[in-house]
Image 1 (cartoon, rainbow, N blue to C red):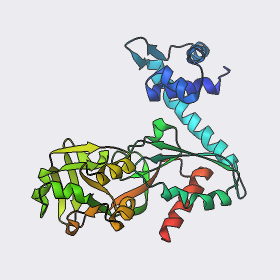
Image 2: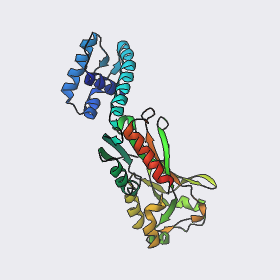
Image 3: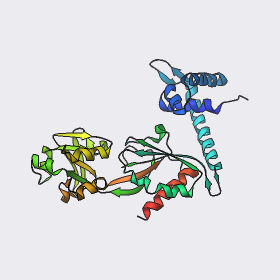
Image 4: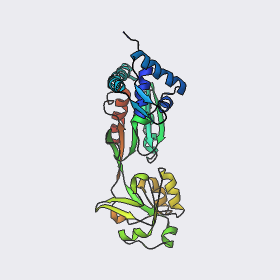
Length: 297
């Protein structure tokens, strides 16, 4: 019977997933030279070359493809078993990795995470900011919190809440640019918005009247909503942004709402996780806790 190193097998599956040994080495935090030796050791143990690798080619061999399916199944089962073993009575242990998209209000977690941590003091929490389109398979996170559902078809999405959207601009900007009375008037203006709200040089407005594609004089896109708010306040354009993030500026009239009668559709804030991992104790308790918290709001 051949003796396998699980770390070698895990490196192989990660290299295939990420399309290269160096990427896998970075994610698994092993030296690149060691990663190469690990793959060679696994191939020597199996007696087959698993990967074609060169300067322009990185692909599975026929034997590698056959081994990959079994390796992924075994590792998934092992990870699930180890995760279940950490669930001793009411004690949930281990490390919960949360990926939080840049476009999400930080108060979402800041207000509710302390209560969760008090319930599960033995669970280590790690939170990382990431781009709007969170890929749990590549970002090495357990769960993700992001806006909308686009691009997450392969993941389970649980809605936490909705956030009203608003078009707003500084009074100085509105005074210096053409007046706005209806949707067509927006075409003469510059917009500030997130990546998910823009297409090419246009913004996408979802309202009670349907979806409107507005091509203005230009669009500045950013995955940092606080940066967009600052640009709007100093008069750089009309911002399409969650109302929650500009509530103070609207109250102080540093910004004013534009066409509030449009009735813009709210955006969804979702909690995502990979199918099949829902029963891992650390993921299960976090998903259940967050859904319970927001169900009561």
